[in-house]
Amino acid sequence: MIDLTNKVALITGASRGLGAGLAKRFLQRGLRVAACARSQPELAGDASKALAVAADVTDAEAMQRLCDTTTERFGRIDLWINNAGLLAPIGPLHDNDAAAFARHIEVNVVGVFNGSRTFIRHLHARGGEGVLLNISSGAARNAYAGWSAYCAGKAAVDRMSESIALEEANRGLRVHAVAPGIIDTDMQAMIRDCSPEQFPRVQKFLDLKANDGFSSTTFVADRLLDLAFDPNQSQQAVALSLPLEEARSALA
Image (cartoon, rainbow, N blue to C red; front, side, top):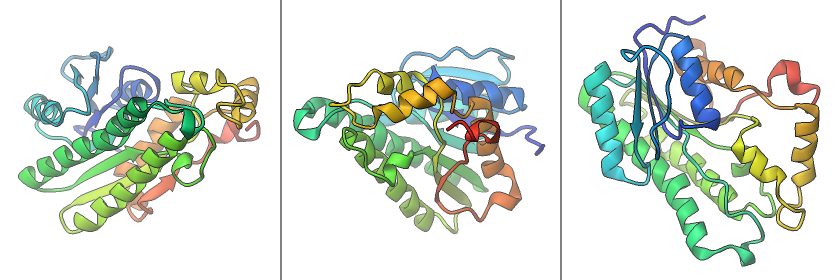
């Protein structure tokens, strides 16, 4: 495995689901980890390597305080993962609540902007290299009826990431918008609770659950660390999708 000694990762949306799984695996792999969510995440492990902070990604000043606190504790940030996100509202756009749609974009797009800008400024201040990973989705690249907010937000994350890559190409930053595959999280449970009228493709996700056709958070975490720190991965496209975990792919 890649030597990750003294690498520092910051993960947003880390109180549950993929974010919590990433934080746990990163600590197991020897990284120092800062994790945030609106409510303070629970991180098991040595306090000298784990920092949990309550911070809302829609608050630009909170993201700067998070960066400052992490830097004070660990000295630097090498990898920033914008993972926090919402799925709701689900259903035909004509039935969506305007405030819920606006809140979705605030978290899934403005939150990524706030985190990305904070990390870019951190890199400019300290110099050197860093990796920004924005968690995207296949829904950014393929439309789904009932997911107008989610598709729009994730498509925006892809284009934002590509713009950042162009802007920062000569400043030591590498950025990717990563569709991590399908992982059995609370978001997946929300999808499975939908009616076909809300989300016509719901049966696909019910079948995935019945067949255990998901990637594990450990698998996704290891692939993201490869992407961030393996020199052989440095030429990957900005917007990319992780493969489904091989042992499970035949079930999907």
